Length: 260
Image 1 (spheres, rainbow, N blue to C red):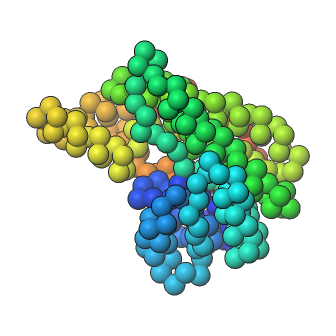
Image 2: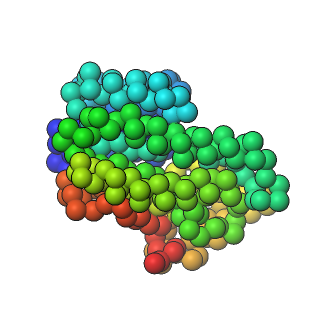
């Protein structure tokens, strides 16, 4: 059991990746503490992955609010007595466009969620993580290192790129406490957001969904995109003791679309 007895705080639990990460934690023997802004999403996810409620706790959490981040960390300690890892899935990814049409007030909000919110949630968990060491896993994006041609998300990419830089500093600062900090970089990840993109594009252009999906996968070494479940498996590994000597690294989970 990869995460037996460990408690993992997961931010941004909804219908996609956050749910898959929490499910992997419970499946692998751990306790998942679920946070997201929408309480109904948390209740639905917890009921699906942990029907008897023994291995999950949940609290509506806005990571732009430091007190709410601290409350989620406190819940983990109250319920399970420890925090071994924190996984940052929460993000604002619905701001589209480039530099020419940028609304920088919106960019500031994206940065407040994606960059500063991740740092707030990390800091809230640090006292508990320092007690025995542990892992911080950040969900980044391939678009931070290679902009896609199909859609512009400059604000999202910039905020996630800043997180990668922050990861290096945190890995160095927290390493003496045996706290590891790593980033997972998904590409076109098959889950609710990409499914919606494929459906919308197919309807807008009057073409089959398979044609749109084919455009996304044609540059991938593998014949299909990674799923949100595939990304969750990488997260579970990095959160576990099997990755005890890995820190300050970015792992692409992208079916080989970008290799480096």
